[in-house]
Image (cartoon, rainbow, N blue to C red; front, side):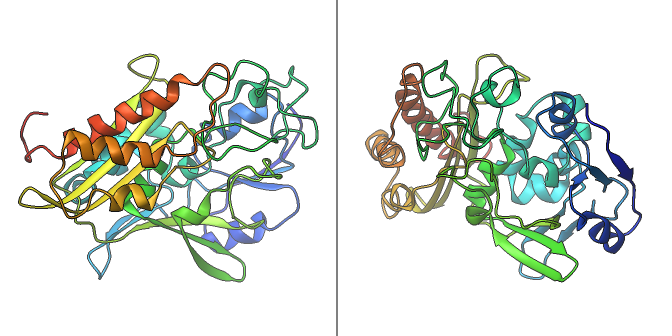
Length: 332
């Protein structure tokens, strides 16, 4: 582990001042960053501990939406009455991640910034990783790529984004609120994470020194009909091979609007508006759900070991929509 300096500011303004220094990194729960530092993947010069900042509130917004402070733990966010009542899709996604102990430490802001769990990225014994060392190549393309991307990948990187929370936030069209020493800006979740392109080392659109201070959820018509489905190799403490956030707004038996997002398949949560629009205006059937699933997976380019993800994702979308379509409190 490389040596680094450390500070624990008490105010947001002080944290922003410290975080604007070269080589500085913010750290909250540390459930991802500390692992990367110990493995030698990340080498910050200065850690700015934001865990004491007053950013752990959950507050109703005037428009009927909800603000989650960046420092609220995943456990507290998932179990907050307003989250469970208005955004059960998010609560389900949060509770499917990691383990109880890690959810107690991990924060909403840190969850947004998780880095990929690609083996070639995490293990510095593998020399070829463009995300870790730009220009070195992508070991996963010709290596073991079972967990890797089937959508949105590039010649430079086929890693996937690991967060469950972010898949739900994508379906709910959340907005990430960030601050630096010059002020505040709002980033729609669809624009927050990057596809790899030619710069796979860049995961988000955050500028240096910017701090995530909150996530805003708009008013949602999807509380009664939502499902987060996670398919993984074991029942807990495992990342998704494929996950689906499905949400329906129903009028009788007719779908008024739908939201679908995939996880475990791309460098960011994956949405295709055409797949959602295909469901609107008619009852949900096995045929319409399968059609939406195919639209969501259109253009998939699997690799040697992960071609199974295409069919798996299509079936998972159909299943998640079926569960979301059930009557509130009813059985799947």
